[in-house]
Image (cartoon, rainbow, N blue to C red; front, side):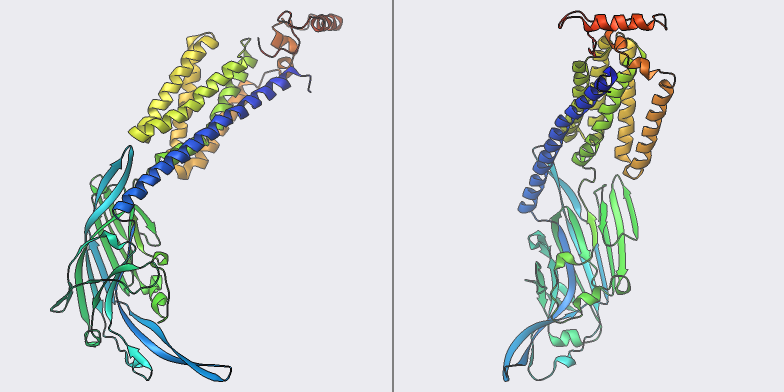
Length: 475
């Protein structure tokens, strides 16, 4: 086997394919680097404005402290422990119209939204009689609105409580990572009959907007000029409409579906606002050209392998030979496609960049192969097949859900084509040294002795001699 010319040629081609994986990995590193630059720009914009906003509230927080005695080593010790009672709204509705604005630093962009949010809440009268006992001191209750980044508060109207107008004050009392505002209330106000509250918040943020559905019945309605929303999180909108002018979406949920009230059932509950489920929409560009380019590069070995195998099949079916250097040059053009795709996509978008890169590299390969393969028709046929592969790859990238189906179909078609083209090929004749050295192999006209004599004469050829070297794979 190791003396077979065909074996060494196939081994060489596999080595060339593995060699082309080195620039492929280098390209992946470039993608990660450029993606990191883009993320740093988004972080800078977020640092100068505000980050993704997650809103919790409105809800009422009643602070109180209780004297608790414990017995240690037969001695009683007491300490005062601070707790909070959380009163959630029966009905919570939020309506808003965040307007998205694109901020650009260099070639990178970040989306910043700003707009008014209208809050309405309805509370049932709450009895605090269970706290009216010895050793308990009840503090002043507050209506609280918490945010993940309070820097985004541009303006907030006074709270409307019945006929009263009460201004908000800074600070929230909702555990770790909670920023926000509150309105001081009295026990009489929260223990009266059913009451409604209303206020308006002008908010700024980046990337995404989330609202935690704390009400027994919660609704969120958003309308925006951004035409590429991405509805993520634990709840999908019940209704949505997206077109080139923007989107409109409506969420709805209740305690039976989300069990939100359980998170606030304990007076000593410690929770993180970022861990609570929420209505969420992402207001960033959903088509990430870095991610698409990375996915495209993963198919590089398929493109290079099919192209090299096509050359090998062409050599096997004809008397023309392709040198390893020519393999490498075509492979370099195939890898260059991905670099051009990455570079142009940062300026022109992924689709237009894909068209330019695929046409440019296919044209380059067509011109080169026309000379290598001895004719324009052969070069154009190879370039046409390559363009067809690029078209299939674009379909794979755009339809991630059908990627496996399309990929399996492509491999089946390629394998079927290879089997049909080589169904009558005598691989023993292909493996013959005479085929690769250019010697004419007549159809069984030489006797066994003549063949042996010819082989002995070939072996006797001195090193660096004529083109009839026995193990010379390419002319």
